[in-house]
Amino acid sequence: MKTKTFLPVALLFLSMCMLQAFGQHKPAANQNGMLILGSADMKTLVERVEVGYKLYASSVPFDYIIVSGGCAAHASAICEASEMASRLIAKGVPAEIIFKEEKSKTTVQNYAYSRALRKPDGTKVISPGDTLYVVSNHWHAIAVAARFTANDSVTARYHIEGGILPKNTDKVNYTNIYDPQVSSEDFSAKALWPIVEASFTVEKGKKQQASYRFVDGAVYTQSPANGPEAKAVELAQALPAIPADWAGALDAAFYNSREKKVYLFKGGQYARFTPQAKTLDAGYPKPLSALAKGLPENWQQGYLDAAFFNPSAKEIFLFKGSEYLQVPLKGKGDALVPKQIKTLVADWPFSWGSGDLDAADYSSQENKVYLYRGQEYVVISLEGSMNVAPGYPKKTEVARPVPEKK
Image (cartoon, rainbow, N blue to C red; front, side, top):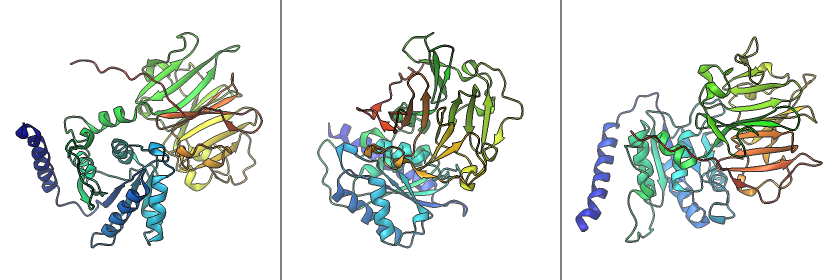
């Protein structure tokens, strides 16, 4: 029995050593990064920040530091990433090299969200060829580093310092994160399912509407025709107007009920088309700077997170990172000033941190806005002052397709 117990662990260590030795020499253009894994326990979190700072103060030069951990994980009162960032900045670490990943609630999600984390210009923080130090006071850093090395073309090294004692049931391959046979895309899709990447709802005649939600490369449609259950449809079939090179992950979308037009955003461009049309409107895609006058320069770069149109106020709401913009439909060209997302409503959920939304959608039948973040969503009423409906956030319910047997 002992042989069966320790052999997988030995193989794990051996494969990690071989993989790390293979990537010892990195091109000059590649960067050194650090990923500090958070904790819902303040004492543990502080210890991990200290370990990370000691490494930062060493002879290893760091180009970026990711602090990974969400808010209210395991019912805590901590926003892990924000807490870690504040402590590092107080120690003299430049704020501009710190990137917050504020959605994860588990170690698996630490990995999945961090590998997908992007800078405001849309480039990934962690790039192939980088050397990444995964930092913690717990051995879960070993499995996270192993997956980065084996599956993401990254030379990852675990950096652990602490005195946590293992239980007899603890495994080095924490929660089976390390599995070189499962691609990072498949692993992350399962771990984070379902992330709504973009969403919009189209009015279809009197008191009827159809909703479109983009999840993991597919479009989930919901309308009176297919009942209450969302139906997965290929993008080309559901929305033939979308160009083939726009297939995959969109950044944001909204339906303008006054123009009867759908707007889609990807990178620094946006597209427009009429529902059921087979092509985009003439002249599209266009650069995001053409959407409205007065867009701040960093917003013109694109890579939005979410958008919706409020027909009553005649305003487009755009979301990016921790900020949002209210864009008048017929603006006068005045400079638009971003606001903090958590000030959008007075009762912004603590567990949703500073924002970092994934999608938004407006329902004309309900006069409500649906905001999506991670695996959750909230409903905000536009009647009177904007407020989050009682009982939210709730889990987003989308049935994951069963992979076909080969």
